[in-house]
Length: 106
Length: 117
Image (cartoon, rainbow over all chains, first blue to last red; front, side, top):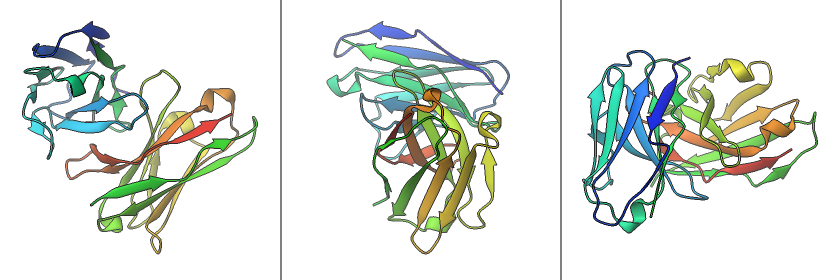
């Protein structure tokens, strides 16, 4: 299975901050990388697909980049509703695997 | 609008089985694969299995081979996930999630079903 890592595991930020989360795969996954946001007690929501594609209905303050093994999720100006946990997921090889998550709090 | 509605919470004894349902609406059921993903309390997301509702073919994570069975009922647009030989480590929220147009994504999710062993 492909192993995914994320950094940092948690971060503290303020409304208006620019936030960057990194995800790394232990082998090349091209751009088969997706990002999800999960609020406490809720199901995850797809934010970014194929490394940089913005899911319909998702704010343009979210962006993704990267290819191969290294990827980033950027929130350009953090809003109150963005305090959540973020997961990356590779969809290059079955089984799809998730990173351990990055918690963004106040 | 796309909706995935799961069955309610379950409490099971070790060694028992549980069957969770996921009823889809708002799209053509047989056109999109369905994932199952679970999340233990305070932990991350773990992929379990996927089913093609059109033909019923399945792929299971090796970790769950022999214990998990996914089925579907096209007449009711419902997918089922049955997990057997339950142990305390199987306590988790179980989610169904539709595989989106980009292979491997999960673009719509059910509300989750808590299974307590």
